Image (spheres, rainbow over the protein chains, first blue to last red):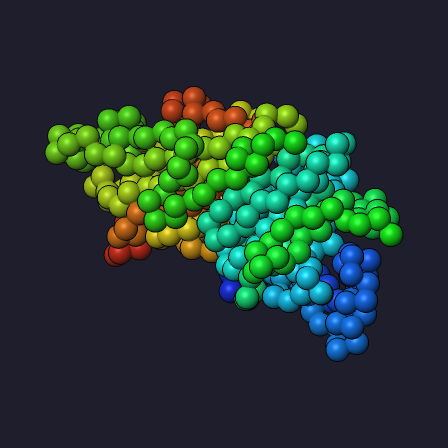
Length: 189
Length: 189
């Protein structure tokens, strides 16, 4: 068996960190093209290259049957009427599902079926689970006033595919309408 | 894509329930043979067939790449110096790992390598994760004064194998020693 310290980790649900885990930080400048409102994006960026989100991942094993897991933390903020959000991804191994579990804050997940393009908006709140089936692009969105932190668990062989989404982005946007998140179609350029 | 209501579920971390999920309840009478102290077990059972633990599971899909998840709740209690605990299991599909995450209370997980018989005691507390690798029998133990609740996520094809453990049980016991959990070898009959 692995050593005990390889099997244990502590989540800080408020800071959105797992001490000792590999952590990726995404600043606004790295999210060019994610937000539909290009003018608003340039205006926000001109104010400063703010941190938008962090993801810390733990990969205890890489065999079939293994799981990887992590914590995400999205800071509160907006670009025009679009909330701060992750780049979003499909899994390289398309059948891989992902289990999300809200820890702090208020958010939603944008789910898009790869085959049909159908979009869904799922609430992500403390102690609520969102099950992302395979073959589904998913993006996490902070719709609240404070940080949104959440746990994610996925098969070790899932992998992350940002490429396809980088080309065409999600078909829908999550925007603020009267203080609430709303799902609207992305306008063609 | 599945309907949204099939993708969402709410955890009640205090009650240790997921409303709407299939829930298994285990009473003391169903745990005959799990506790090493047979006299203490009969004495406890004579006082009443107490509820020891519940497990609620959600199975959103059954394809390769899918995940199942659930919540466990172990009530506080002891049989002699042994804490209330689950039956424990191996996965039918042995390579399947399981991710555990503490929600409320104080507990430990007993991990036993199937091949070597090596045992480990892992703390399970709120916001702490325990990664159970494949090929590892695992049992959850409530060492605290109140209910222990926790989240578990595992590959859909993992399955549960109680059979082998029912025959020979775990090689070690988790007992109370000076107010703390201790791991001791099971005495031969």
